Length: 139
Image 1 (spheres, helix red, strand yellow):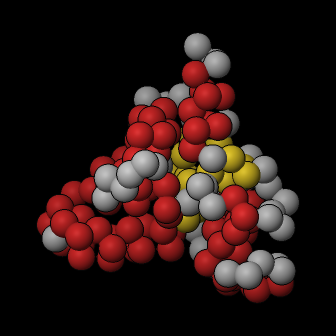
Image 2: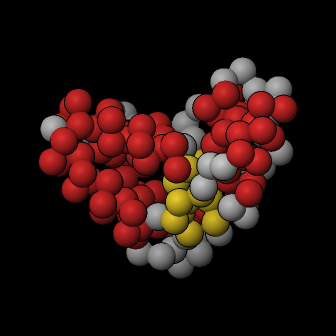
């Protein structure tokens, strides 16, 4: 299954945000082990670096982003993605961009813990816990 992972889920792991970190870490582990195909939006990568560098320093943030790039594919953000995101009736443009980047990259769904932000999504939306349970069921 090919899923785009929302920025907040990765931040939960990188910043050890409780109580969300455990499910998010299991999700990233499933991606790392090839149990599911993970995508990060290109904008997520820059956001992760910016926020992580503030929390853990630029050198550690760079290491973390490098590691993520070995695990995840990157869903590009181009003019077509941005234009289609602007046409969506999402409250937040960032969420609309994630959705449209996921669609353009052939994702089968989105993983977030903020499902309400994706209420108008045309792709299925899952929590990290739901994906972890689905992957565990494929043993």
